[in-house]
Image (cartoon, rainbow, N blue to C red; front, side, top):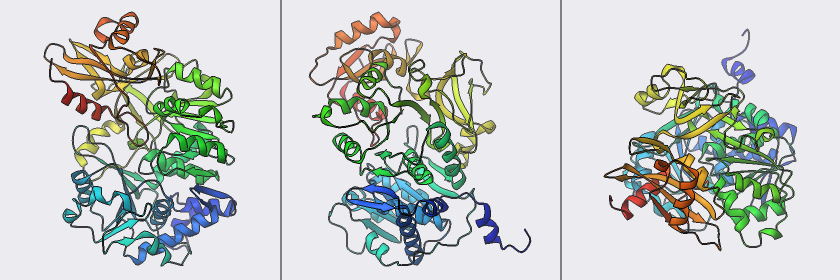
Amino acid sequence: MANLSSLEQNLLRRAVIGDIPRRTASRFPTKTAIIFQDKRITFKELNENACRMAHAFEKLGCAKGDRVCFMTHNCLQYIYAWLGLSKIGAIVVPMNFMLKGAEVEYIVNHCEPETFFVEDSLIPQVKDAVPNLKKVENFGYIPLTGAETPEGWLNIDELFASSTDSSEPLVEIDDEDVATILYTSGTEAQPKGVMTTHRNYSITLISGLADLNFRKDDVPLLSIPLYHVAGKYLLLESINVGATLILEYAPNPVEILDLTSREKATYWIYPPTLYQILPSMPDFANYDLSSLKKCVSFGALMPPALLKQWKEILPEVEWRNYYGQTESSPLGSTLQPEDFERKINTIGRPHTGVELKIFDDFDNEVPPGTPGEIVMRGPSVMKGYYKDEERTAQTLRGGWLHTGDIGMFDEEGFLHFIDRKKDIIKTGGENVSSQEVESIIFKHEKVMQAAVVGLPHKYWGEMVTAVIVPYPGTEVTEQEIIDYCKEQMAGYKVPKKVIITEQLPVNPSGKILKRELRRELALRFKEE
């Protein structure tokens, strides 16, 4: 363009993360953007603090394209750092705060950051890895709990305080530049680093408006960890529309109820496990949840009995089922409120801007009613896996993101989620969907949570195994569940073993970790 510098051309029409808080601050400068513990931050303060953090990291030597690792629970310091680093084109690598030693070592050495910040209480989990993190020049901590910290490590609060410059950084950043590297759980190998671009995040904001009905008068409660793509998406959408976000350090059922009641939250986004737990909390009936207008369930289908329970508690709430992946930032599909009860066993229709198809094993599209792999394409699909061209080529082959999930479209165009490919149980020559068996077990009036997995078996190949958490105050037996299943499903799908337990392994978002469950059960039960 005539008479415009390269930077001016870039600033004129780019869509990047760091510009989002500035634009909203110009619309709602004095409105509360984030409520966290005893702090209330306006949109003007949010953007200025992100700018101050950007300049602080520049002084530390961080520049465009540099990777910066973080391992922390949700906090304001991390939000300022992520938005600030996005303003200077640096790449943020958030890590699951449950990781330890060798897991930390692999990710940090793989992405090679020069700077690594760890929440003070999590330092014991990383200390064994620290001597082996050769590329890291700056170790820092985030003081959230008052835990002991190593000598010589940077205090992020002091780093922030050292910067008084709240001017907007002027850095040329392209929409297709990588904004974050998000490491996914390693199921078949080491974790994969999903490269998500500024454009990926920007495009999801359109879907948030169209498919999740995000509005400026919403007050979402964000409990999902901010190392997770869904947490980042919800944070950015709240900032984008000018909603007041309530931030939780980590999901805590009592705190969720208290914050909802006290701060008049309007929006919940949780996996079914949390919706199942909340009504069983002490004094549940004493909390005022009447402010809630919208609820999203993700990670697994909402059992009909659970929806019935919540419909009685909050009859006016809009319900949605959500499906997405880290690799799709995390777009996919949503079941909308008008179809929720009628189609509760589906994950709805594709999100705005997303194409979904079902492919067979040879990457041919299959007709409605035929199961196959869910594939998708659209502007929210990742750039690829960091330093892994082979797995990138395999996952994105043919110009489609291959999700590794099995699904099926019905005649009305609603997507049915059948199972993760790796969670299909191969027993006695038959394929059994763990999700299908779970959906039936959930209908039993005494079952609060259920997870079905395949365990190695010398005769069956894999043995269908159900792990059940009953509702508090109820008792259920293994035989009771087996007899119930025999009445409801084909014999080969009926669990050969049922385990009654008090809790299931879940991640910080509340999603059941079947990988951990299989590992635990394999140790408990030798091949039968």
